[in-house]
Length: 243
Image 1 (tube, rainbow, N blue to C red):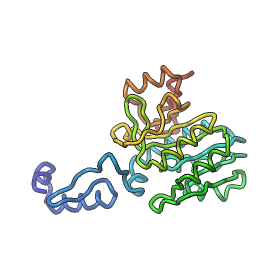
Image 2: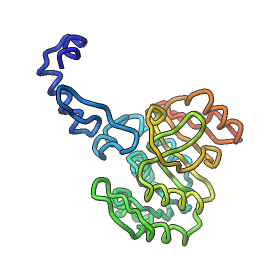
Image 3: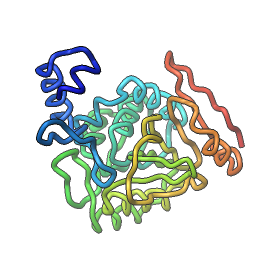
Image 4: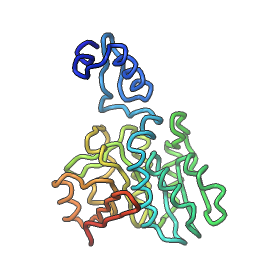
C-alpha cells in the first residue's frame, strides 16, 4: 500500500478503497498487502466488462449496426459490445435475429419489426450467455446473412481469442453458418490475453473497432481484404480497407 500511496501522493486509505472498488469490478484480485491484476486464463466479471470502454463500445455498435441492412437474418453472439449492437438495431425493419445471449433477446423482443429466436443450452448466470452442445446444434440449423461476434482478446498476428471453450465452440458454429462475419471489439482487447482460439482475422469480413489497430494486424487485414472500420465517435465510421 505504502509504495502506491507515495507514488500517487495519496493516503494508504485511498489506495485501499480504490483497490477494493477495482476488485468489485473484477479487474484485480486482492492479496495480503496489495493486489494482483486479472490473469490471462479467466475473464473479467460481466459488470466490469460492461463498464470498460463503454463510450467506445457505443460508437462501435453504431457503426456495426450500420453495416446490417433491413430484411436480413443474423446471429448475435455473447458479449457486452454485441449487446450494444442489438440496441442499435431496434429501428431496423424485417430482421430475423438468432442469438445465444439473453440480454440481446430482451433488448429486441418488443420490436414489432424484428423476429427473435433464442438458442437452447446452458445459461451462464454471470452474463446471460447460452452455451453448450445443444447451442451448437441449434446454430447449425441455420445459414444467415450476417454474424456479429465479440472477442476477449486479439493478438497482433490476427488471432481472435476467448476464455470459455463452450463459448468458443458456439462462436465457431456461428461463424461457419454466416455469409458475412462482423467482429466488434474495442482497442483494449489488443492489450489482453486469452487462451482459446476462436478464429483468425483473415476469416472475418468486417472488423469494427475504435482505434487503428497495430500495424502488423492492419497489414493482415489489408492482405486478406478484411474491411477495417474505425468508429471515431460522433457517429463517424471510417472504412479504411476496402476489398
